[in-house]
Length: 209
Image (cartoon, rainbow, N blue to C red; front, top):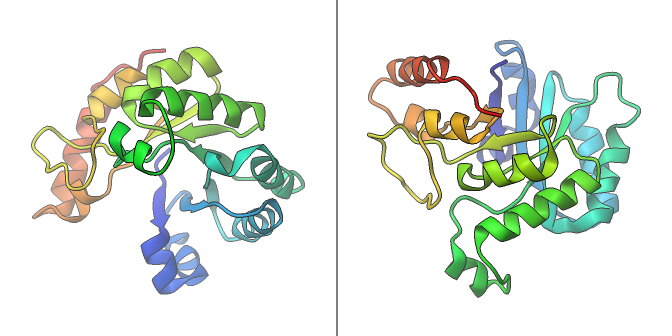
């Protein structure tokens, strides 16, 4: 199933109206707002987001820790069709040096794996992580734990501000359930052709579990 992703830029500019209008065009919405606040605030925000039309997936930062993630889980528990909750591990723009600058020790791989385990313990549905960590997360968290891989770039595309990237086929072979593709499509000379080429590559890959 393909989803339309709405991130913080569009949501800040247009608010819930963006979800309402795009829900008419899409089978579902991936609302990527990366909630990160005290448990009560995140729980309330997740509950409100889950009531927007066709929101099928939501993101929150695993660095908010267990109580925050469980507040999000509790907030959707009574919904008729609760969205999947995904914990953002380590942003794909960050490397070891940038983690160290903000006081986080270890490599992105070790930290992402630790945070994925925490998300599973909090009963989230999956995580957002780079393809570099996907295989280790799959082994640790099992076949039913969703892995959403951002930073997906066709071989010919610019890296932009991403550090830990993969091509669509590499991400799928690493164990991704969903791929996030943004600028390689939106900034292409022909977004339609770029999207079709990526879809063709995805269709040609046999996922590995």
